[in-house]
Image 1 (tube, one colour):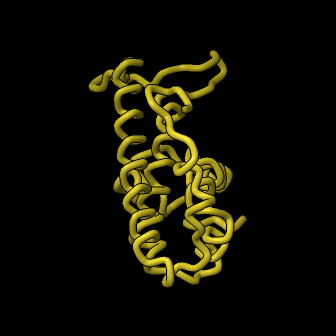
Image 2: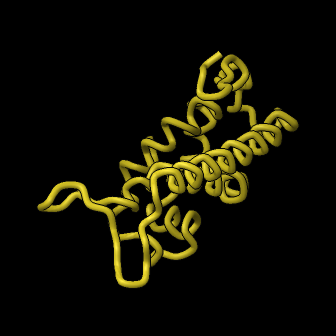
Length: 155
């Protein structure tokens, strides 16, 4: 599976600049994991392959990349808060900054995930409103039409 954006694009879209997170936190494998975990089950394999092949660049840039960047942010936030070191897993600290507590990090992750899910739903609405323009998208393959999650429980 081809990547739909570069790690640098993902960092810039998710965090505002490439200086916002430590170099190397957003990797190609993390991007691939986000694509396979969050986009492919909703958009379908054929449509994701068409996006990777450059068939729908405008849709990719305006609808898919922002969603993918948010899912990448969702995945990388725990790694941005802690680091493995010689002393084990450590939290960042400093003279003028205090690390976020676990509850704050969890709230931030929930909000980022909710934003990503909202934008993904909007992208799906665009796809489903114009099926002739996006023939590779098959709404029957969209997992969100078969399964729902409420309160962390799969229904």
